[in-house]
Length: 254
Image (cartoon, rainbow, N blue to C red):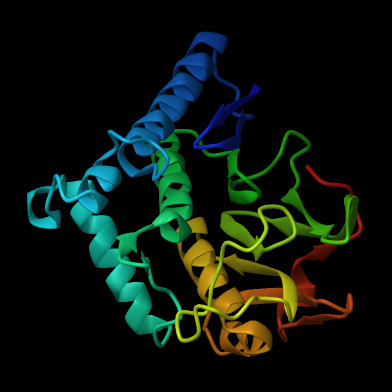
């Protein structure tokens, strides 16, 4: 069973392939989407009454915020330290943890499915994906990397099981990632950076930070144990980490 809904300002897709009764599949999918609605209501910077907006407007302190909000702030600070400051949720005196929240939410949505004894599924939000087990054909899940200069073209197909794949770039949402050491600098050297990791939370946060590093980002990913990356620059040239090739498949996505 597969379903896509628009939440958090992007399409979110859940596919379950375990052989369970339809009502059990439907209940699980509804629970996952309800969780994403919860995350959106709490962390959306576009909603005036969200918890993050209340913090940014001075109506709520971080100390008085919910446990999830405090956790995201703590994880953001941890990520900032782990990336030499290249991951920073503070922008012009306001907080925007979106670069961490999406992967964090997908990770927890997958955990919900595991708690319900699902072993074969994927959860995708805005191009970032967590896969588990096998697809409907009994194979590793196929995940495509889009050509940032032609979104109808897939430049690489990855075969992944029990892992996360995240892509950061400016080719869809425009300039939304900045080098915190030079906020006036437009990120133009690199147009797409895909990171494969053990889970989507880790892949997403490091993809965001590495993209902010420009050309040095792929070197940062190379040095991270357990991660692989694929970077495309403004000239359309690709460079990838030493272990990336083992994930490449000749098959089609999904």
